[in-house]
Length: 256
Image (cartoon, rainbow, N blue to C red):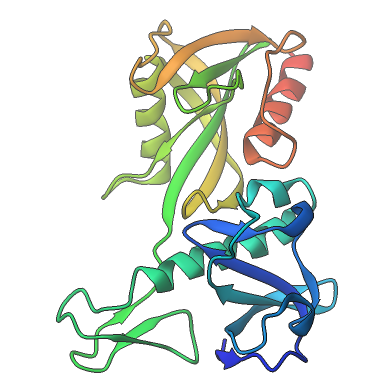
């Protein structure tokens, strides 16, 4: 975690990030020595390991080829996770130059992901936004929705952020009711996925339909409907937890 000035001899993978973007020359995460990428003199810190080599974070914006980390998602889930860590840390450091309590300049901890105020001794850590996502089955159909921010025709499962004072289970029931107007039962946890857009942790569930008729929330959704498991619209790519929940729900539908 110790930040250091690059001499040019350091080797590894380079997450060069600022403002939620990452540098991807030719669409790939750069690897090799710091000198190869003209990074000597910049400040960097190790944030993990990939294929036996260090993954470095450099908090800066390059002149060109800054892109969304989604381009890395299809290469490897683990690499995407490390890139996401770098992007979130870069944004954390960018937004914590000064203490929110007393206004004095912050210092980076050398022992943990934190910013420290030497004046009032406040300590800040990166914030993670918990979010639930759920695949819902009704006999041999799955509930899929087209979100307002998905203008490319993708249909996916319902999701939403956890509110203050809620359990994850309460969030799922509330979000499903608010977005689709139905009630669910037999809720069970499946898996989670870090999602750096900008700093979410997606927690996935499966559930069964209980009652009610679909009345989608037009503020959040363009549409929502039941789809037979072998006649699905365009769905998210395979590197997302949404796709996993859809595939697991489809498997359950086939066994109905």
